[in-house]
Amino acid sequence: MVKLHSYLLDLTGLVVFVIVVYVVMFSQFAGEQVLNHIPNSFQQLNTIFLSILIEAIPFVLIGVFIAGFIQIFISEDHIRKWIPKTRWLGIFMGCVVGALFPACECGIVPIIRRLVAKGVPIYVAIGFMLTGPLINPIVVLSTYMAFGNDAKMALLRMGVGFLAALMIAFIISVLYKTNQFKHAINHPGSYSAHHHNQTFLQRLEGMINHSIDEFFDMGKFLIIGAFIAAFVQTYVPAQSLLLLGNGVIGSTIVMMGLAYFLSLCSEADAFIGASFMNLFTPTSILAFLVYGPMIDLKNTIMLLSVFRAKFVFVLLAIITAVVFIFVSLIGM
Amino acid sequence: MVRVRFQHLLKAALLAAFALFFMKLHLTGEISNYINPKYEIMSIIASWVFFLLFLIQLFRIWGRDDIHIDCSPACSHSHNGGTIKFIHYAIILFPLVTGFALPPTTLGASIAVNKGSILPHAGLMETHDEVISNENYMNEEEYNRKLASLEQAGLINMSSDMYSSYHGEMISNPEAFAGRKIKLSAFVYKEQGLEKQQFILARFLITHCIADASVLGLLTEFKQMPELKEDSWVELEGTIEVTTIHGQVLPVIKASDWRIIDEPIDPYVYPVLVKIV
Image 1 (cartoon, rainbow over the protein chains, first blue to last red):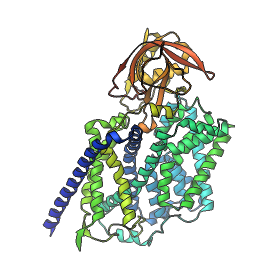
Image 2 (cartoon, each protein chain N blue to C red; image 1 turned 30 degrees about the horizontal axis):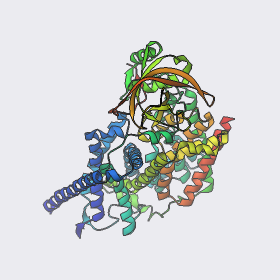
Image 3 (cartoon, rainbow over the protein chains, first blue to last red; image 1 turned 180 degrees about the vertical axis):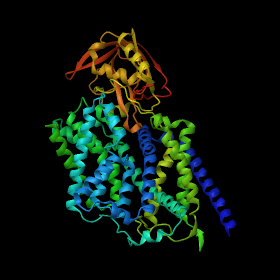
Image 4 (spheres, chains in turn red, cyan; image 1 turned 60 degrees about the vertical axis):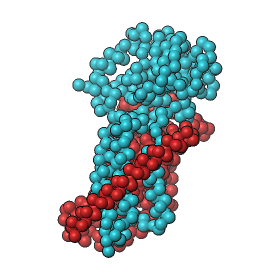
């Protein structure tokens, strides 16, 4: 029986590989045939689209592995023990843990989904989501360098970002008490008990299987988001955004819009922000730097796959309003 | 009952395809058309991780045909019906198909115009003393020597490694360079508001990936209208002068000698990072 099973495995492995190689060969052949019929702008769009994916996928893999780890190795009881009882401490803890945790926004949604499923209050998870990609050593360093080795912008970015995250998490804690998942969780609670009897290896296998499913779950939303972001970059001139005005308020809105639609990685967006220094006010650049890592197009689409649409849009509105107000206050 | 679970078979095939895709990017060197070479290691690791996941996924193809078999009861995956599932996998397949089928292109004039302009790219990269790994690193001594040569050299040579630094200096302080000779290779494009004999010579600066490219452009003026198409690459020598556009002081290169060249193997430039030894 065991022998038969391993034989089956070899065979399927081979079959799958042949299928993949066939598809690869076919698409390369097909590509050569249609290449001349595809407009150059679509090829540029495709290049930008793939470059976002190639940059993001390693971070998504890290994210789904962490999510898989949380799913299998951390029980609801652990979470109950760790999360502070009072709301204030919970919000503060969410933001601080996020700040210490060197996440990238591409991988953060699967992690918070898993945390909330395990019973972490929604406002703690949101605090974590907001500061995770924004406050970490690589982001500080790249911001510092991008602005001509001037620490002011980097410090403002971290400081304003942290305060805004606290405020947003607080508002969420007032508005929402439940987990806000789109689909109710099936039978929570009974799960950790049945996993306690498994060996470490079985649990490790469970974790990896989980990570694979999570990758496919999240991957498609990442792909949709990356495609839209690439589309905007290819077909929408940045200067058309200037129509919205170039006063302090207008330019802040423009820069926040840019941060949202470009969906850049928080580790690279400082250089883009810096390239707008002559076009826009420093206040609006700061808004760009704080807002982008907190929420952007591809994250919104990933969030929509997990949480209720109404919750995601309210969250989006709150983040936008709070960042705008905080940055404007600093500007004055 | 033991039988093939089609969904798991599909997932295994897609994981293998992702592994192959990342490997192909490295074997063909196409990766540098997508991301800054300093991040290559991340995608090499990703390729091996995908391969590992593929092997583990193989174990799930044969088994009981039970949807929730290795899902926890607390799982929140979507278990939708046929058509929706098909769309989901089609989305995952899409980048693999375009990735294998279409070769990467180099960003060109149309993107440069979208990114907006010869508008100064100042404040960027003026002094450097940070330690980060990067393909484009040099030690401080070398960097300072190269930056100093910008002050003295009879001819400013805009080499790829120093392009962004020299460009930053020129844009932030054009007057200091007035009258100096310059040599550079770049692609040309037109922008609204330029005279007939004016072009922009530009390179893309890549920090992470092509999506974060920014344009390092220099206004260039020819004596007569040259026969230049957008997106063609030129090697050009000229003299830097200063002009004012919309109240902003900008350097302008008066072209004295130029010729059309092939697109270089590495068309992009990267930020300089100084290595302190």
